[in-house]
Amino acid sequence: MKHYHINIFYGDDDEGYVADIPDLEACSAFGGTPAEALEQVQLAKTAWLEAARAEGKPIPSPRYRPAIYQSSR
Image (cartoon, rainbow, N blue to C red; front, side):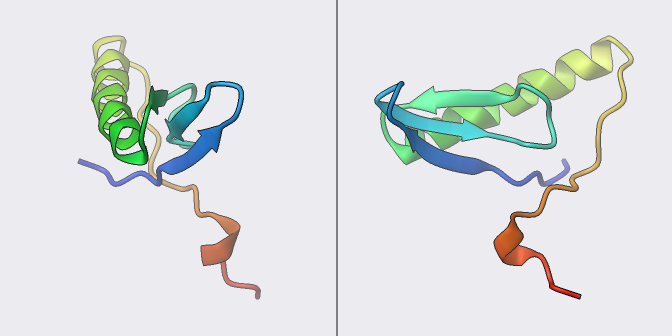
Protein backbone atom coordinates (compact mmCIF):
# COMPACT_ATOMS: atom_id res chain seq x y z
CA MET A 1 0.00 0.00 0.00
CA LYS A 2 1.22 3.49 -0.77
CA HIS A 3 2.44 5.65 2.09
CA TYR A 4 0.66 8.98 2.22
CA HIS A 5 1.59 11.89 4.47
CA ILE A 6 -0.89 12.41 7.31
CA ASN A 7 -1.43 15.75 9.05
CA ILE A 8 -2.78 15.68 12.60
CA PHE A 9 -3.79 18.87 14.35
CA TYR A 10 -6.05 20.11 17.09
CA GLY A 11 -9.21 21.73 15.76
CA ASP A 12 -10.60 24.38 18.10
CA ASP A 13 -13.98 24.31 16.34
CA ASP A 14 -14.19 20.53 16.72
CA GLU A 15 -12.62 20.49 20.18
CA GLY A 16 -10.61 17.45 19.17
CA TYR A 17 -7.97 16.19 16.80
CA VAL A 18 -8.32 16.13 13.03
CA ALA A 19 -6.23 13.95 10.75
CA ASP A 20 -6.17 14.41 7.00
CA ILE A 21 -4.35 13.02 3.99
CA PRO A 22 -3.67 15.90 1.58
CA ASP A 23 -3.11 13.62 -1.45
CA LEU A 24 -6.56 12.05 -1.09
CA GLU A 25 -9.23 14.71 -1.61
CA ALA A 26 -11.60 15.04 1.37
CA CYS A 27 -9.98 12.16 3.25
CA SER A 28 -10.01 13.17 6.89
CA ALA A 29 -11.12 11.92 10.29
CA PHE A 30 -11.64 13.06 13.86
CA GLY A 31 -10.60 11.74 17.26
CA GLY A 32 -10.45 12.75 20.89
CA THR A 33 -6.69 12.13 20.90
CA PRO A 34 -4.04 12.22 18.18
CA ALA A 35 -3.88 8.41 18.27
CA GLU A 36 -7.65 8.12 17.77
CA ALA A 37 -7.56 10.57 14.87
CA LEU A 38 -4.72 8.58 13.27
CA GLU A 39 -6.60 5.31 13.68
CA GLN A 40 -9.74 6.80 12.16
CA VAL A 41 -7.93 8.37 9.19
CA GLN A 42 -6.31 5.01 8.43
CA LEU A 43 -9.82 3.54 8.18
CA ALA A 44 -10.92 6.49 6.04
CA LYS A 45 -7.91 5.97 3.73
CA THR A 46 -8.81 2.32 3.22
CA ALA A 47 -12.42 3.24 2.44
CA TRP A 48 -11.32 6.08 0.11
CA LEU A 49 -9.00 3.78 -1.86
CA GLU A 50 -11.59 0.99 -2.07
CA ALA A 51 -14.25 3.41 -3.33
CA ALA A 52 -11.88 4.88 -5.94
CA ARG A 53 -10.99 1.39 -7.21
CA ALA A 54 -14.64 0.32 -7.32
CA GLU A 55 -15.53 3.41 -9.37
CA GLY A 56 -12.51 3.09 -11.65
CA LYS A 57 -11.10 6.43 -10.53
CA PRO A 58 -7.36 7.08 -10.58
CA ILE A 59 -5.46 6.69 -7.33
CA PRO A 60 -2.97 9.51 -6.85
CA SER A 61 0.63 8.78 -6.02
CA PRO A 62 1.88 10.15 -2.70
CA ARG A 63 3.22 13.61 -3.52
CA TYR A 64 2.50 15.93 -0.59
CA ARG A 65 5.56 16.93 1.42
CA PRO A 66 5.26 19.49 4.22
CA ALA A 67 7.43 22.58 3.80
CA ILE A 68 9.68 21.41 6.64
CA TYR A 69 10.79 18.44 4.47
CA GLN A 70 11.19 20.30 1.20
CA SER A 71 14.67 21.27 0.15
CA SER A 72 15.33 24.86 -0.81
CA ARG A 73 17.06 24.62 -4.17
